[in-house]
Length: 103
Length: 167
View 1: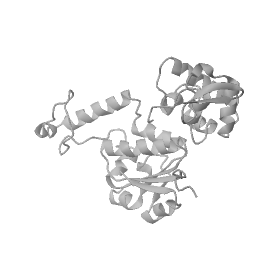
View 2 (view 1 turned 45 degrees about the horizontal axis):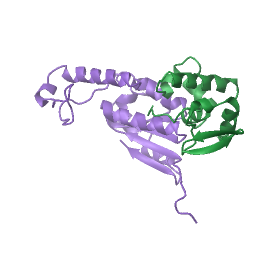
View 3 (view 1 turned 180 degrees about the vertical axis):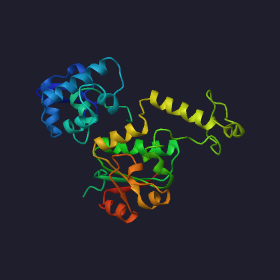
View 4 (view 1 turned 90 degrees about the vertical axis):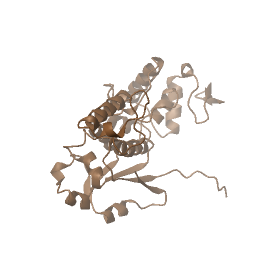
């Protein structure tokens, strides 16, 4: 665990860069993490990010399949929004822990 | 020079030659996992593995209840081989396994393949096996990318960060 300054805010991050406390998250932090991954966030991205955060707060374990069935975005759309890391990159940007599902 | 520099995998080419539920799912989980990691993924089905991309069979794959020493009864007791040979037992056990997998959010075979292709993974059938089982492209799942010879498959496997995995 380390302390890192993202978008002017000091946050605790894990070794591979996921926020340790999802309540430290804000939209500017999301934008800065995203730009580090080469992604420019749009409203479509934020819809997915907010969904991921809600589900995580409810204690759900996220999989690409469940997100694809959320009604927010389908699997193809998710790959388009977060290329090469539909679940990992979106989780990192959403400030939630690294996904634990294999699917 | 730092010899410990990480060189992430760029491409995986997988071969699934068996049609048992667990063999096919091993290939599907690994292929989908690779696509989700941003790795270029090619999945080649041959011999009995073709059942996984044949419309008629893909969503009713079986697991072997005889000749499978790891098979257990619900609760963990050993599964008697004699019982596994009775008519209907293999179908019942297989359907139970599919149900348990569904509970773990593992999709049926066709939906799993859709996850893989949605992320850009490619699915192929082996030409020799397709000919041997007297199948045609119409018998296969609609999104099978191509029916390939093994030579054409190897052509896809170029690159020095490519791995071939045989399940």
